[in-house]
Image (cartoon, rainbow, N blue to C red; front, side):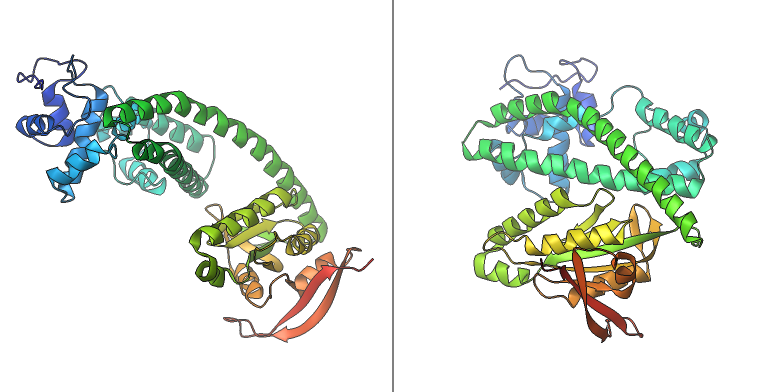
Length: 409
């Protein structure tokens, strides 16, 4: 097996052994031992040279060793192709010169405290230990430009937090789905580790460039929708001739889940229960009113926010009756009121009240509060049957509930 060059000043390809070792935080002798034991897939196949992909493998091995894994265990993982995604990290790493925090402050025109806050807010964590890349500095310039344009700092930080959370979910989905549908099938087929690495790196090179245009397209389309909804919401608020506290918005809130979901997991297993949830969520997303969107999901529960209580109620009644054979029926609770908007989510008493209402619903039922009836009572296709006043958990005053259903005929 070919050995890496001993002279740290002589490049063996794109990188030197010294650079690879320093990047992983280990000695050059340690890297040599790992190569000799076959822990770096592809290295040793003539012509041997240190590439960014090989350096990425070394960093992965170093992290595994730091977490207490033995070389024997790492070798088995390497032979099985479990480490084949290592080279993808090299495709995503910033190259080029590194810059100090002092230079970042100067170039980005932001103080050090704000830069640290920006990194933590977006979910990137601590400032980069090896310094800032040219790409980092460019982003800091953008941040400075946005603040100079007049966007208040609290709004900017909230926006950055939402960006970070949303993109983190996207990135996790990309990794998980490629692992489940590409990486694992290759391992099960006993494809050699080096071939898996080549396949995974090729896939990343071919697919990753499309992420940005997809997200740019969706952002533009969805932004246009929300701008229109916001204009309508402002107009309706003016017509209502009442004002809300700063940071609050008037919304209709629906919580929907599957009745008997926990029992389904026991009786039919997790896979069958998850299939029911996926079908439920798909129906929710395909049928939502134009002004409504899914805010978050927790297990089988979906939180939906809309501006029109009437449209949301009509949707909920139809959803409650659309059940796949064999799947548990949905139950839905709706309330209308004011919510505090923070970081892309909605908080407050009225949100909590909607969450408590759904807990009182049975399978296939839509329960709504008096506020919803007052706003949606004009619907000709929906009737509201008064259930009475009930005490919801966490609320000292009783809540008047109604059963919403399709009007016969």
